[in-house]
Length: 148
Image (cartoon, rainbow, N blue to C red; front, side, top):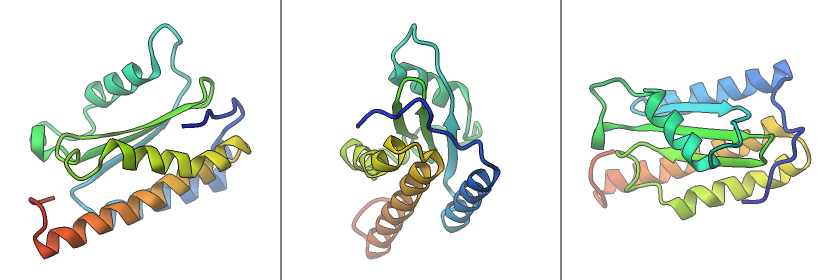
């Protein structure tokens, strides 16, 4: 995905409140989903992808009863200092959320991030994610896949 400028920020209160509402709306529509958005400057000594993996696993976003295929946690991590972002799905979501599709969501946010509009970029990812989860849920109703 294209890099993020160092000034990407969601420090403005209206932007944070809007994102919180969007996250709450997605979690209301998909109550089995545990969605976390983290914006943080990670240390340079390790690759960004390793930090995201560690955070996802050590963060324990889903409780202990939701491990393996019942782990429907989803982490959106943004490091504005490095100019990187990633989406890490739990094992229960991996069959439905392909890496290429998640990368496309990040690419969709890139123009906003490149213009320094951090909250808008995250909002674009959330909107695309909402549509993607809806399409997965519809295909579930038709019986095309296993239970989500």
